[in-house]
Amino acid sequence: MKLSAAILSATAIGLSAVQVANAQQTQPACSSVYTRKELLSLTASEWSLYKSILTAMQRDGWFAWFSYLHNTWFGSIHGQSQFFPFHRRFVYEWEKTGKRYNSAFAQPYWDEMRDYRTPASSQVLTSNWVGGNGQGTNRCVQNGLQAGWTMTYPNSHCFSRSFSNNGNPTSWYSPEYIESVIQRSADMTAFRPGIEYSLHGIVHLNMGGDMAQRYSPNDWIFMLHHANLDRLWWQWQSGHNHMWTMDGPNSDGNAISINSNIAYFNEPIRNVMQLGYGQMCFQYSSNPIRRRNLDASTTQKISAALPQDVLSEWFPDTAKSPAAAVATVDSAVAASGKPIPYPGTLTDDWISKQHLDRAAVRRVEADARSFVDAMKKAKYNSPH
Image (cartoon, rainbow, N blue to C red; front, side, top):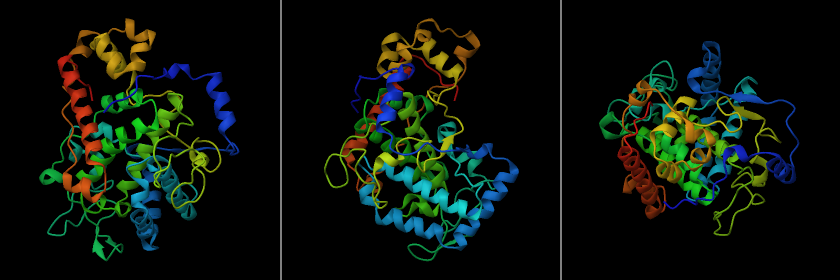
């Protein structure tokens, strides 16, 4: 995948960005902002409350309704630039529905990059949280949040998951690669496929069952997953001077802009572009402005371990940082970690069912493999 090198450093956000934001923003600033937390950071009382809310939402048909909407509008919200604004608005609508049951509800996210090496072993996929793989012929899930649920859309069936690779999904995408996509993407035309055809697709496919269908909101992992993808979009927006970047094709084939309407919701994309304004009165727990997917020690390790030409190609922001030129790590840190594995690939059958551009998907996957090759050649070992 060719990604433009015209990247601005995260540290360049200043008065000019504020002036642009003020010029573009037509929504009032929120009087208060609530926080979407990473799932495993919820307190026991928060998780207990959320489980009761989600159970009530299933009882009252909301899982079926959101699955119906996603299925109905599927072709208008994937494979082009509606992807991010639609799903931001969609997850917010879900969250707003949950708040009708209790105003304390805030949709969490799952930081899937943390679990990218061995997804099936994630704590998120245990009985204490959202449950694991389905069992039996119909792959019915027997533990966790949705254990034993009967879903009603598109027909009556047990809630199911069918992990790929015989229950042991292949590796997902590393924090380093996702950070590289964020740093290298100069516009939505690059950023959207870089995320949609990598982390987005592989999680849907690997979870299988309901999550691998067009009606994937039957699985609450859908909301955890898309809240995380929205968090990544916000990182790219807020930390890379892309607050108002919206380009590429719309679902009607015309060029998209912030004044285009969001599919189904019939309101302009500009309404959801900036968190903290209008209805978007939330923030992400791990994302103050300019925050990265990589912690400071990992960023320092990348800076010290990679030659300047490799940094410039794959982490242009890091390469431009003065700290990158002088960063050092002790021998114990430099020797820690393991090589980044190749991520799994999307199957032709899944790509076809999703009506995606196969060539575009394969370009993203080839880019990810080239990234892994470059890291291996540089003898970079990831601490993740």
